[in-house]
Length: 203
Image (tube, rainbow, N blue to C red; front, top):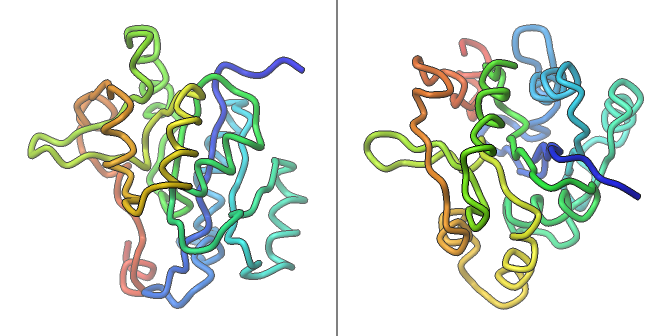
């Protein structure tokens, strides 16, 4: 079966304890948090997989989400492995050359920023296995980034053999192609996540 050039992975497996749990289904400005990245990917006709925690956080809402978006659903194979496990499960569930990886809590995401990010694939080199936005101070945005399928074997090796499960550690093996965050959004608002009850209420 042929795959797509671009696929999406929405990571929805975090516990979200600071926000009271069930983070993907917390309501922000009248919509579930998870609906924001889902709506953007759907509007761009990018096939995507949503990866939930190994143990269902809310089966009814997950079914409701599946019925609404008709996307692929996956679950973390192993608990407490962080976003790397979600990326692995997403890559295994969807056949694509590049994966745009997004968190479930990015309500300020825009179609324009995704299109711009994808445009850098054309100028990246063959051995760049990821494209990652970077701030002027060196801080990176690994959960608003592109990862190549060719990185899957590295990801699998790290998850099975290493104790360091940070995204930065993974990226260090991928000969990353860094782009300025301002290239995607001068205001940098697209990178703002919702992590607390206060942010949920006031943005």
